[in-house]
Amino acid sequence: MSNLPLPLSAWALNVAPSPTLAVDAKAKALQAAGEDVCGFAAGEPDFDTPEHIKDACIAALKAGKTKYAPTPGIEPLRQAIAERYGSDYNLKVAPSQVIVSPGGKFSCYLGVLATCSPGDEVIVPAPFWVSYPEMVKLAGAVPKIVLADDRSGFRLTPAQLEAAITPKTKLLILNSPSNPTGAVYSRRELEAIVAVALKHNLYILSDEMYEHLVYDGATPSCVATFSKEAEARTIVVAGFSKTYAMTGWRIGTTVAPAPIAKAISELQSQMSSNVTTFAQYGALAALKEKEKTAAALKTMLVAFDRRRKFLHAELNKIPGITCLLAEGAFYLFPNISSFGLKDTEFCARLLDSEKVAAVPGSAFGAEGYLRLSYATSDEIIQKGVTRLARFCAGLKK
Ligand SMILES: *Cc1c(COP(=O)(O)O)cnc(C)c1O
Image (cartoon, rainbow, N blue to C red; front, side, top):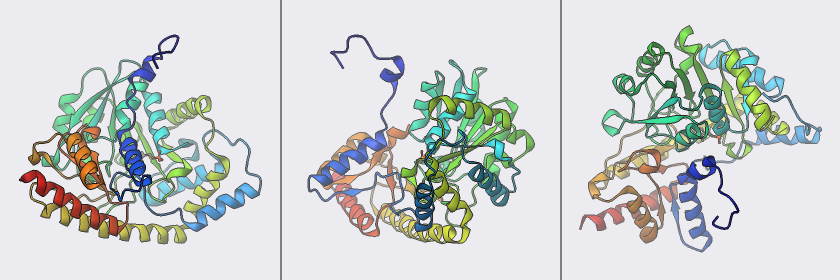
């Protein structure tokens, strides 16, 4: 850096690298060096993409689907995404309202870029997904972090939202089920929050990436379905990465009111163009071959649910740790504040002494917690939580 002839941009200098990817990289490096690491840091399913989805992609590749496609996605995929909002949520969506982007992360960023100008404020409830504040900053806007800790089940209250709004507030970001906490808002809770956003004339970016990964009978809510007024201001982001074990495919989806969808498509046309053409045919098979896809999802959900309950029970047996039983995604977010250590210090020592990788809560705007992903094998969870218990017992002495 120091031998650059002139400085890098404010964007490059101010962006924080993803802490979740950093912990995961360090754990993988230790593993490569021969250490027996228990990794709880991964943010992706440990399952492979279902065969029928891969087959459809391979067939498309062989059939020459190797050229540029329309920026917002191939027509049959946009159609299938529009239809699935109809069947999943009874929401009437036109294919022109759908944009397929290179990953849900980019979908979120485009949603921010389409709605926020420099100086606008964006309300980001914490614990937040690590990329939201950085995306807001990369749009020149200002993230306003509002912490909802475990006392409120990691769910923002309407009063907290109300208190954080200023005349500059333009956008509210919601994420239920949540990464990192796994918390799922009830429809009533979300409706109360959306009412505040309506009253203050805000846009809403609803990141529903984990909508299908819910347990204990929890139901996901699609914010755009609440009312015509909610629909008119909501950008719904979802995707294939988490639900269908397709993180490496890079396919995210946005559903938005037509003028916003058009703006997002135009931004995308200058920033990335279409998602890899043949990959889109794999995504199409995920939506079209419904029975096979449902069976694959069911297999993952059964495993996730078993691990969720096991990990939750074991964590709460450890003196000094308390952990809520989250109803969604594949994360638990235990409170470790009783140990009197900074969470970064806790994680560094845990990795050093017990070779257990976890991401500190402060990476998500919530000091005093850990994010543990249970998208890993039952054996690793069992072994890792035993080591964590030993580590905590050592701290208590
Ligand atoms: C994983 C994730 C995304 C984006 O996933 P992509 O891999 O970019 O499709 C978006 N939001 C949340 C909360 C996530 O955890």
